[in-house]
Image (cartoon, rainbow, N blue to C red; front, side, top):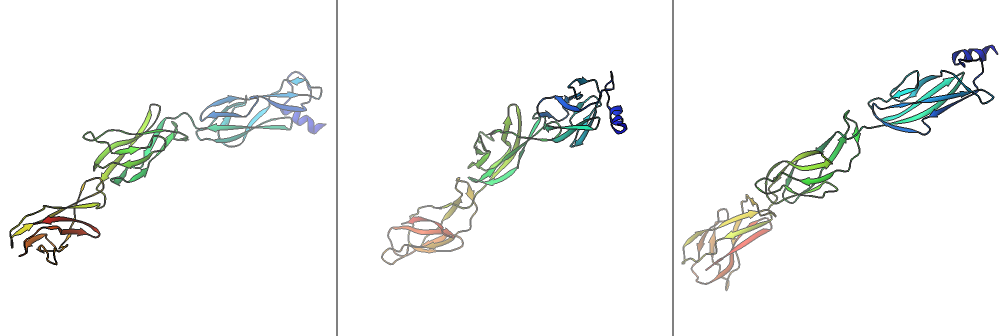
Length: 282
């Protein structure tokens, strides 16, 4: 009896010495989710063995997780999302409640990465949303390509995924890949550079007198048509009646017509690896 009296003294009916036998959190009635720095008022009800509600002042405390709770049961969330377990105690009876603290409303988006791509290449952009305190907020942004340079966009992007494909025009495109949720947006920079050699064009088709010389040229381009610097190997191919059109310096493309007149189609060739093109000689 004396031991029970200790608990009663700590949380007793303010109008009579009736003993608390049951303790219930009556508000809120279901698990709560509140934003960081948000508040929620908890209320507990104590009863005696006869089921009568007692006028008591229980003790509130935080069992685990962040935030604070006042002596009257007002819980204030911290600045970090997570789960908090709250306890209310009266006359040796303890009841727990769980509250979920979620990130606040979207405050800012960060788009990454700034990217350098060859023409036609792809890159996966990502966007991270955060609340005003820097906590990550789940978002589903809308992607777009903006800020054309000289009327040309950096490339194209899938609006729902952020998968970007570089265009065919090389250049620097600042703040060109954008992600938005409503009016909250951010951008990333793109630089489009020349791609690998895709094709060679040899010129000019030439008519020469026997023994004359001509300087042939070869221009390399990537898949987007941008010029690629090359150092081709020159040769004379496709003999007519076993006779070649002439000779050529392999490193420079300086051609000298032979002594046999005739038409020699596709006879002057320039190659970089397996990529080649030819010009005609008469």
